[in-house]
Image (cartoon, rainbow, N blue to C red):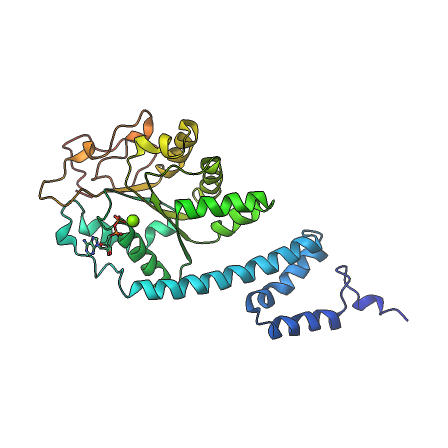
Length: 294
Ligand code: ADP
Ligand code: MG
């Protein structure tokens, strides 16, 4: 005898099978998959997802939860040392403490902005990016921290395995992505293209903090491709906050000439007085202080 027709769902699953799946998810300690199994099965019933896609969703969601947990633990460890409180702003007169502290309200995450920390090595860029990540984690937001080289490496590996889309989706799930060390070493061949795809996918959806010891004008070299660099800067300077950290000195900030000139519109967001940059409108000229932020 076959199962009664009424009990057989288009997913091909009887209630007994669904029940067993759920019990196994409990046994395997997969709380996120358990949480979404019903809605995922409904997606199959409605013909919105295939069975394989449903499986992919369940596993990817569970993996993200685990990754987040791992990162939370990592962050918790790091937070012991790298916090905003442990950052000595008096050593860093080129940095406007109020503007950094304002980021801790995390509105830049809600607004999916890009925060750039630019300056020479050892000036606390990684420290500050981690400290902001820690604030975000404390507020229950998901954060991914990695160097540009690590991220590009992970994307390249995923591409070789035919899983680039999934990897990009994975990176897009975090509400804050911290890309550390856009540095002297150029990225691997094709890495720029992969990073563009990630940046495009997150554009206006997720916030990003980038640290670099090189100015925007040098991105063409870093990514070994001026077209790639222009595409990246187009996205990453649209809704952007730029911090230029100088080697500790008592010199006063010198407005827009702190960041090297770039050949295109990317050069505009260089005034340290322009915390939020929009494509429309220009930042204040040299010497002008935006009264709202100056
Ligand atoms: P960068 O990423 O700019 O190369 P780091 O953030 O790695 O620099 O800083 C180097 C070390 O110095 C780190 O241990 C960091 O915590 C510490 N450090 C740098 N600047 C400050 C500061 N102003 N206050 C406290 N610690 C700092
Ligand atoms: Mg660093």
